[in-house]
Length: 257
Image (tube, rainbow, N blue to C red; front, side, top):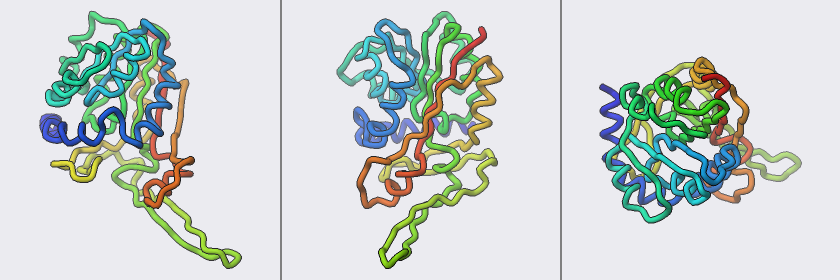
């Protein structure tokens, strides 16, 4: 099964990924963490489920704000690493968020909110997650997720840089060329240079992702497109994603149970 291969790759990459991520790399600290925290609006005592938590860096962050956090990942190595980290109390468990049978183990619990940080594009299946979150969240509970922006930052995009001289002054312009945005597909890619193995990405257009959750009683009530608008850098990636969003962060609210 492809999902087993995906899991094996993440177990292989876990230690290297943790060495590069730590408690958040620049992409996470500049774009993802502040946006997710704003949309979650964490309150002390709030019960939060962190899905696909990786090394637990965001789980520890929200726990430090007073949330009661259960954090899961299907990679045994990621959970082992997360448990080894110092910080506030977080309950970690190995759990495959793409599996109905695995998610059913949480059904005795209820959460005020759930979060999935930069992982939906790594999941072969997302329908089981949508289906079970509709049972795990209290009515009015929220699910906040972040992903690479599928319109502008996916398997089928090419980054571009052009120079011209309007008025005799050299100007660099950056762009993204998009192919087959509406075609759902998977393929291998690299998240961090030097990682031991390429990982699978599962491209879905925004409409497909949201439709899956709308069908389970969720509505969209938060939508952010963070970019590197305030960064100064020579990297083409940073410059392309200065005025084009690199990531997408959404808040879904459960209106029916």
